[in-house]
Image (tube, rainbow, N blue to C red; front, top):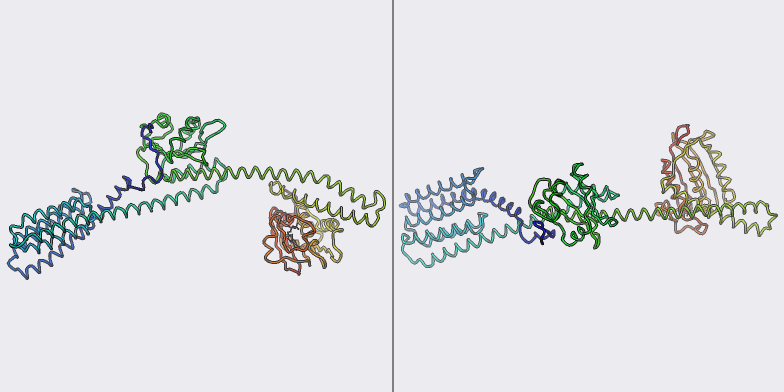
Length: 608
Ligand code: ADP
């Protein structure tokens, strides 16, 4: 592709064949296994020879001398081979030692048989068993097995003139079949082991990659702004790829350049140099064209993809580059690498680099969505606050004139006019309450709700709220106030306390047709406890968890028609939290409800 020694690789390209590093791990594992198996096999062979010699001596006592010589020779060969194979620093490769031992034992069997004039069929049976056992017991491939089989067959052929006279065609054919079969067996066993090793390694790598990327995803889910997200991403990249540094470049559409947005593992002086870098538009289109999933630069000095001098100045000897894509658009580039190490990256690193780029794309998209949502929410809050504010002034004018009309400032009213005016006043008050609630909520949401603590005269507060509700108490309901705290002033936020009381008492009156609404104040310990108890319709237990949520009203409420938007209790709860207190409710349908708020009491001094 004309980019020097730069390779673009799909993350899964390696799955078809073993990578060189995996192949060398397989070889290492095979050698370790071979060393262990040779020791065990030699032990079994010696045991077998001892038993066979016993039988041989019992049947042919005249063969004692050749048997002794051959057995001793085999014993020496086995001991030397096991010694060489178990040495920590091999003089000869274990596979060569095992092959030579196999050949030696095969040849020894033929020599003994020729020496004693053995029956050809018995010899072939023993050699056939020997070759098959080797193919099964030793984890080597077909090549050593070919050597052992060939040498065994060859020396068998040389020994035939000395064997007991008889037909040779069948025994020879049987030995050749055993030899070829053992080679095929060795090949199959090795291929099966190799495939199992490869697929186990792939599964292990899949698990490790998935775990690493899951960790990256979890970590990035907690970060909310772009700079912090990318900085964390680069830290995680260094950790996961076990490399020296990691950079993120983000495409700036206004300047039509990629610029450094974050990095990790980079000394400050190098960082200030990289910050000056800006890849222009041609780079962007080149990045689009060239990068499949990951671009590998095994040696910065031997490529033309990125200016070599620049890379070396930035402390990069080798690098993995992946693009961050949103839909069809390349929105950035991730580069990770080593300061000094050159050479190819592992498959796992390439897959992780591709996964990190996907994680980056998702994290950046989340950051963008959150920012969009925040902007939309701010616009909405500002709009609602402005509208509510603008509504409040004309509503107060309506209420003011309605009050003056009711007081007879413009002349006496007939009963019908008074009734109509009462409805106008009630409606206007309801709308004003909603506007006030919306403004309260807006203030709490914007975090503008500060706590101003002053000494509060509870009797005075109760009288004030009672006056405001005078006209709203339904016939047949008694609104009672009981201050068990006494005349002692409690320190608290009077405005918030009043808002809380008004909401709770307003609800109690709204949902009570007959009986009482009772407000009580206690001060157990260093706490103020206010309870609003009514004998109204009550709330079912299943509805209790939702009544504090925004805009939630109990469906079965018979008073639904009397207004309210479902914000009152939500505001009460938020204010109680702002004051550091708690709210509890006890209620049963048909028996009434009791809302209790418990607030911490401050010292008798003013403050904010
Ligand atoms: P609303 O504006 O509807 O009063 P709130 O948030 O103040 O909104 O209350 C939510 C819902 O909780 C009410 O609609 C009502 O169904 C229920 N509720 C609140 N206070 C009482 C009460 N004292 N008795 C019965 N139901 C109540």
